[in-house]
Length: 253
Image (cartoon, rainbow, N blue to C red; front, side):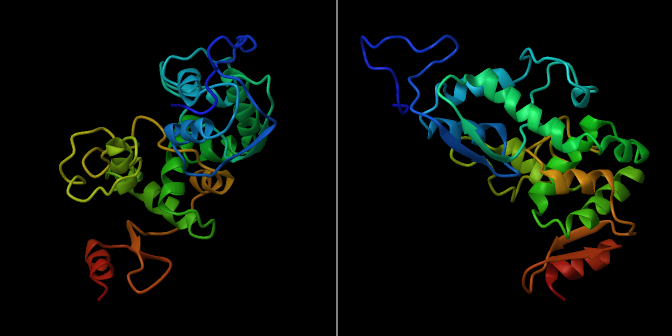
């Protein structure tokens, strides 16, 4: 049973609430989480609504007031990517819609200066959020994100698929394993989120990026790199200009 369900015969919660709250509650959303993971955090706290309520008001087709940074968002898209990471205080009267608006307000306050740089790269705000949501899943290290971004920009420029395994993970995600291993699927999964098969950006963002990932998406480093991989000898990332160099990195040669 979900925590804090109303006992039989209890007075109904305030309008808009679906369970009896026991807040103020602090909630932390880490960068790189997907909507369903945020919903699971909600269900772990005694707030006045359920994770399923949050998924409904942030999901495809939800009625969301117009905001500048949402322009260019495809009709019927969810708010994946716009649920700003950070620590929030939720009060007893807050329902799922009020919490959604709090996250969108935070997104707007933190990102307003980025869209001009993104436009110079030929990216709409939605494309920028989509790319940043991939970058943050590849690395949460702000120092490596601009070079990772350069790889993706270089591949987009020449019409290659992004080759990002994290987008395949997003397509495969399910309760209990939201980011499963993509092994065996990256060359076979017939999904528009499989960026090894499909060119260009995936249809939607895959997670909540933070400020550094969005900055990297809008302001990539200058490089000729087309590939990157985890450093097999320790922390960090290997970058490569050619497939041969990339294979040597992967094999740890």
